[in-house]
Image (cartoon, rainbow, N blue to C red; front, top):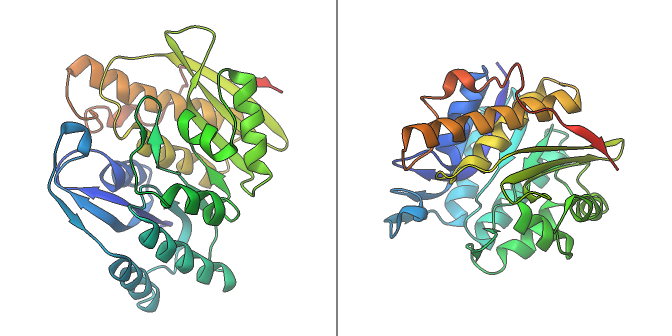
Length: 282
């Protein structure tokens, strides 16, 4: 069974961070190896929450322990999300640098969690810069939302053409594949997703749903990783990932829950046959 090292936040209750990613990865027969960067009672979107900080030394010790105990012998990919602080982020990147130097870093998908449209940054200062300067040059794939894409590229993202130009700016920093979510379209009731790689770019749109979306990016990144590890052709990989994530959000809206209805929508995670198909652009 292939292993995925998932390094991101953990909650006692809810479906964000590692709680979301683990369910998706296990659903498709992958073995998550999880390292928490921060432990919340629930995600902060619900209001004030108790949190157990995990310092950089603890994260480094967990990662080194897994490596020393040969618990990463079947490692197929690394998935990073909310890294909590610059110190924790640096500890993670140093560990991944060590794997890369030993030719043991097979594939890194970096979800550059740092902020969102209308809210701005919600991570400590210094972490966005660390992601831009230290993570982007070595990550194979990045999955920013609109806010994160615009900040990382240093340019506005107001339409599909802007998004493609911003993604190409990120390619120049290192990532071969940029898959950006929550992008503006010509219709206010729709959202776009961009797949940008040197050989091709694709664009797909979905209706905008009114429901809690915390954790949707975590589901999207994990679901995309499933397709990338299966070497699914780009258009189909994007169609399945978008369709599956939308199905989870749609079920959440239908049930009226305040957390992603990920368990209730588990049978829809395959996203096949896809409901939304991309078109080639650029």
